[in-house]
Amino acid sequence: MLRHATKRVLGLGLAETRSPAPAVARILPRFYHERVVDHYNNPRNVGAFDKNDPTVGTGLVGAPACGDVMKLQIKVDEETGKITDACFKTFGCGSAIASSSVATEWVKGKQMEEVLTIKNTEIAKHLSLPPVKLHCSMLAEDAIKAAVKDYETKRGKSLETTASTTNKAAEA
Image (cartoon, rainbow, N blue to C red; front, side):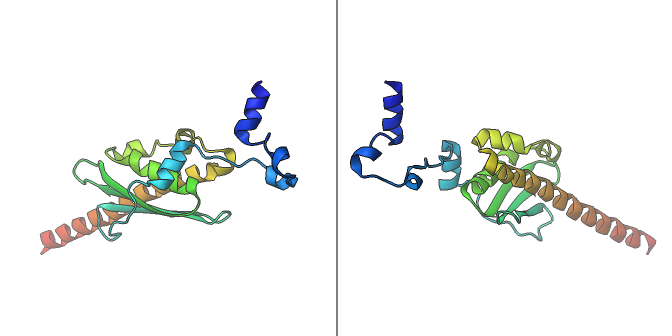
């Protein structure tokens, strides 16, 4: 009974009654988890910030093997160090887009140090990604780290510029 119901749900029992189909046509489709489909159909935080804004950190990462490219940006409140907003643009498969969307949701409202603890395994588990799509969650983790690093680099430069201007004014 269970075998019959399973065949009917998967459409395997009907193949013989309709017309003989080649073995290739009987390959089962690969289904994405509903969270992946949701984030793909309704991506959150798509867009871009001004990359020259000193409060914005930009992470641009890619996977040459599959062609996925991910740009994730964070906007940071300089006084509190909290990420106030995040956005992304991704060229790639549905899993890459979903991973980017989840990453932007997870980083909002968190401290810079806290977002660095987000691991690709957590994103992959949340989206129930199959092993062949784990590189998408790795890209999201790398994009978060690159955005934080870019922000810190910009902040370091702006602090150095402010300090040198202050020193020059004090010397004069």
